[in-house]
Image (cartoon, rainbow, N blue to C red; front, top):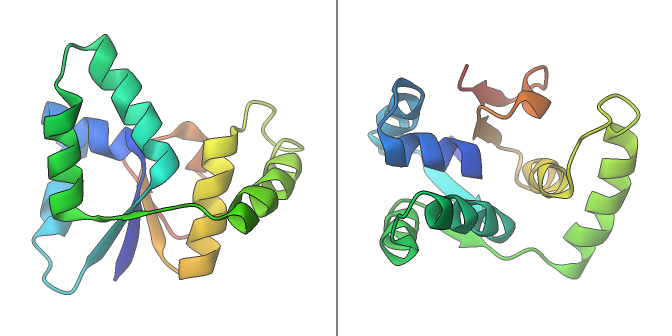
Length: 128
């Protein structure tokens, strides 16, 4: 199975929470493939700065466990449309959330997150 790991899920993993255990367990699956979208690194870096964590060490863990996907021009353009549509239902739906959705559609995979914006979406493992 293929999975996109968002910033929320990575942070839960890094702090060792019970929510992060879901991700730890999925890492044990030999056939699982994991992806982190480049824009999620900004969220994780911001969290690291706020919590006095060494981002370079976190980045090593991310790279060891997932492939970092670089968002193309088209992904950003389609994400603008996706955000426009999602904001009709969730006024605070963000652009990074939109990028994640567009990449999910492109890859045909599941999203691992605890972000409330994804709670009622299909193909989401919600860390609730």
